[in-house]
Every structure is written in structure tokens, then in C-alpha cells.
Image 1 (cartoon, rainbow, N blue to C red):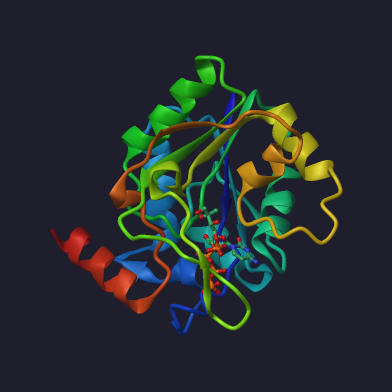
Image 2: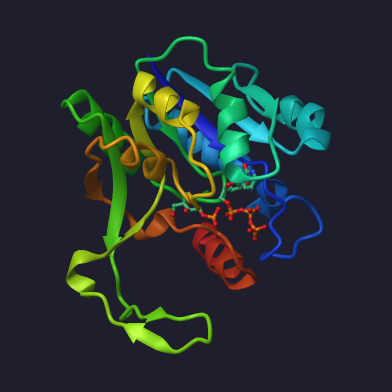
Length: 219
Ligand SMILES: Nc1ccn([C@@H]2O[C@H](COP(=O)(O)OP(=O)(O)OP(=O)(O)O)[C@@H](O)[C@H]2O)c(=O)n1
Ligand SMILES: C[C@](O)(CO)[C@H](O)COP(=O)(O)O
């Protein structure tokens, strides 16, 4: 059983839309609907659980396929994923996938599941960086230039053996800044594998991203 957990509970402050970001229309469908549809189209997902802003729960339930479970999200992404995970009853594998990556090709979703079935406990899609990256101090002064060849930009869906992800979410992370699910698993010392990501799985974060997504959907 493969379950997809979709954090869709963010406000989308950087996008600056009038409604929560996951509800912003893209080619006539809410972003979240495109994301759920591509998970289903992959043919690899048995159940989908989405976490949305609490006030939107009933409205979203009405326009998502009946089989999709909708729960109230939390203050941070990690809280929304935790809430959705709490609604997953039984699963061998769990994929965590941002609603904001609405143009993710179903083939990428299938690639993550294939790597899990191949024996990896945790797998993330990655892309090489196109920019040079600098480390800076609190005053904005450059303190280092990491070797770009060893760095990758990480996308979603991120796939995990369900028991491992639950253990990672149960662990105490203290004040650590954890921005993705694999980051929690890494803290347990479990290897995280990578597969090729896809540029179309970009995260719609800013107004420019939305314009790009609209142009791509319009064809
Ligand atoms: N409390 C939150 C915050 C984020 N997310 C989800 O996590 C994914 C990645 O987050 P991001 O794209 O940064 O969305 P926002 O947090 O909404 O964006 P911003 O930081 O601009 O407000 C999104 O699908 C978003 O809905 C969530 O479920 N619950
Ligand atoms: C999970 C993620 O999409 C991987 O790139 C990313 O870390 C989410 O970060 P955000 O700050 O919540 O957008």
C-alpha cells in the first residue's frame, strides 16, 4: 500500500494571492487538484491524504475526489505533514508531496515508488544547481563557496518506508531547522537515496513561478 501525504496548509505569503496558495486556480483547476490528479495518474498511489487550512476543509472536501481524505493542517509545513500522517491507517510506503508542485509529472512520482520497491528506505528527487552558491555571515558577507558539484536542489515527492517516516516524525528535533521530510530521516542516521528530479516539479512560490506555471498549462 502506497499512501501520498500532501501538505497544502500554507498561506502562500510569498505568492501574495487572495486565497491560500493551494486553492489558487491554474488552468481552471485549483493547484491542489492538479497535484492530486498527477498522483492518481501515476497509477502508483493507493490512498491520498491532504492537509489544508482548517477553514477550507469542508470546501476542499467537496471538490476533491471522494476517496481523498482531507485533514486540517498546522502552523508549519511539518505540522501539516504530521496531521496528515496521523490519518494514514496502514501503509508500506508514504510519499510526501507539496501541493505547490502542481505540475509534477506522474513519471517522477512513479520513479520514487520504483526506487522504494527496489529496496531504498528513503528517496528524494534532486536536480543539479545552476547557480554558484555562497555561504554568508549574519552581515551578508561571503564566508565560503561550497563545491557546487556536490550540491543538489531537492524536490518532492519524497518517499519513505512508512515505519521509518513515522519514527522520524516521532523523534525530538529540539530547535533544529528542518525544511524537508528527508531532513528528519537523515537525523536518524538512515541513508537517503536520490533519483533524478524534473524541472517541471518546481515549487510555485512567487508570482513569477505562477506566471510560468500558467504559461505551461496553457501550452
Ligand atoms: N503550515 C503549512 C505551511 C506549508 N504547507 C505546505 O507545504 C508546501 C511547501 O510550502 P511553501 O510552498 O513554502 O508554501 P507556503 O508556506 O504556503 O508559502 P509561504 O512560505 O510563501 O507562505 C506547500 O504545499 C504548502 O501548502 C503546509 O501544508 N502547512
Ligand atoms: C520540502 C521542500 O519543497 C523541498 O525542497 C522545501 O524544503 C519546502 O520549503 P518551504 O520553505 O516550506 O517552501
